[in-house]
Amino acid sequence: MSTTTERPRHQKANAPQLDPQERDRLEHAFRIPRARFGLGLLAAFAVLVWSFQGAEFNFAKLAEGAVNMTEFLGRLFPPDFSDFGTIVALLIETLQMAIVGTVLGAVFALLIAFGAASNIAPKWVYYPCRWLMNIIRSVPDLVFALMFVSAVGLGPFAGILAMTLGSVGSIGKVFAEAMESVDRGPLVAMEAVGASKRQIIQYGVLPQAAPLLVSYTLLLFEGNVRGATILGLVGAGGIGLELTTAMRMYDYGHLCAIVICIIVLVTAIDQVSAFVRRRIT
Image 1 (cartoon, rainbow, N blue to C red):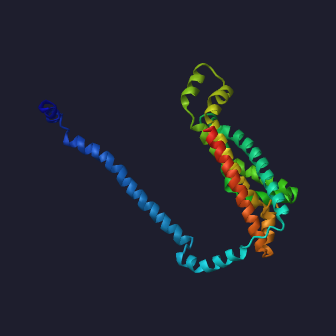
Image 2 (cartoon, one colour; image 1 turned 90 degrees about the horizontal axis):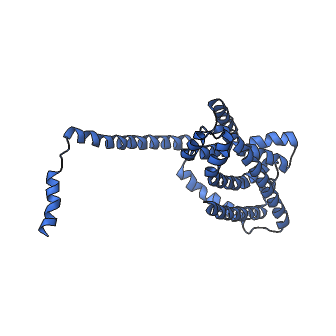
């Protein structure tokens, strides 16, 4: 027992002593990130306060308006499902718009993502593709919807076109970053044996990025279902036009029924998407 208890003390006594300057240097390496982290928190807090003031965010005003919100919510009940058939038909149209817009948008986004991935495309292709996606992403989908409504008229076709173009900007960047995050080892090995660029993408990049691409596409589909309800506000098809009409006519019971049906549809899609994402990951 005495031997075992004295051994750590003996080792500790004979342990090499660290030079004070070297110790200070090592400790300084840990102090700098902490200082930067503290400065970063202060800067983030300052930006947050500045944003609250600029946006005129006011908790007192929110508390004063709580009475009006309660009164508005009280008008919504009971929901009126007398026109349930029309709501279901428009929800099906909204779902169809989201499906077509997601498929077309994902295909075009994947094509442009090949050019926007720095580990695949050369610089003269990479930057124009990134700039194009930035331009598309900076324009609201409602603007695209108004543009296509003026081009092809009212209806779901304009909404699909707007959804497709908006999807290219929103999901194309995510697709490109998913391709950039793949393991470089297999790509280097394929380049070493003389594989072509197409073979590297087909057998090295896509198999690794496929789970993320599918997961992001499902998230895009969920967003497009919700977005299709907004596009209908400008006549681009879907349930949005019926929603706007109910609000303008102060038909709160019908409005509540539409909202409930949209919630049910979005929840069902979210559950199915979550199940598919669990299976692929």
